[in-house]
Image (cartoon, rainbow, N blue to C red):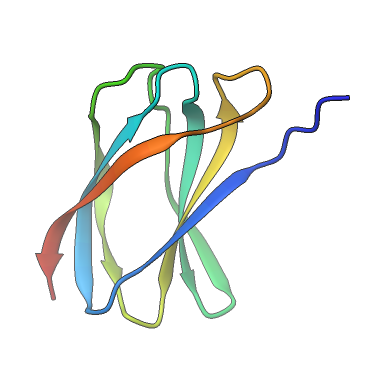
Length: 102
């Protein structure tokens, strides 16, 4: 039996920022091909955007539809819902955040 589950990654910011872009680099063949970017503030969760990375090794840039304010008390979750790998594995080599301090 093959068990496929979401892959979640959480990111915390030590200062308040406005997030405008996200860059991701995967290992080809192990790409999270559908990903919800979720802002979590206490018990509140808001899906900021759903992105669809390509199954390639290149650095991919995703510009958010609306800039997102992130405080030190909130966190950003990346929920990879599907993988290009048969077993559901996701390998992230690099993640970069673009934006500005508040």
